[in-house]
Length: 302
Image 1 (spheres, rainbow, N blue to C red):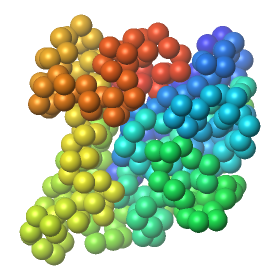
Image 2 (tube, one colour):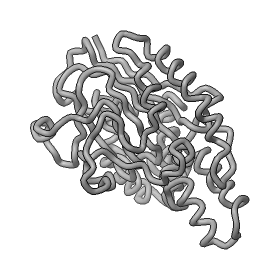
Image 3 (cartoon, rainbow, N blue to C red):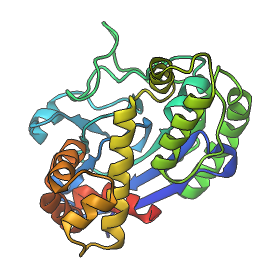
């Protein structure tokens, strides 16, 4: 039996709030320890993970599985802020979990104005440090109780699509109340991170006080948690993922040009930043390595 991975899209009522949800189920699958690792690329999203069954450990860069296992696993509900580099996790045994990606500006509205999601106390080096003396807890401080309750609608024996429907039904009224809050305008939502980043730029340029470049940069940073350059980094990486998925035999120089990079070297540096690997390495791992299931799953959007 093979692991089960699903990409769950947000309904129209949550499209401007949630990018998507990712469901992973390894129960009943015959996997090695290495195949139980989960590799994820850099992301501008706020990621909320609910462990339905099993235990999940975060992996620091260069850390062995034995070292990770000696530390306490993540709590059932954990929050990871946007990441400008790759992250990894690992489960020692069977696991069922769902991760929901929230747009940064939507997360601010949902949490009543908290402008930076905070990571659990046990995080890899790439993740910003938590508030001093913070400790893992059943519900992270930045997560509203109603949202924690909505996550618990995913049951161990349930169809994940049904659990996602229940989550969305509970979350939609809260988002309807929150989306008009804050000093910036809303957007309708889309299936691409690039559409979100372009929306951020447009809304920042046409809203708020001040039309100077400095005022624009402040609004972009506040709403997205990113600089203009960082938004371009995520947008180009997504375009590269799309292009390479649609035409895997395309020359690297052609992919670099079409994805918006200055040249092939620029693409290679950006790809190593986003994934930790060179183009040849990441392509081979996505094709052959179970641990890179998330990359294959995300390519379904294209």
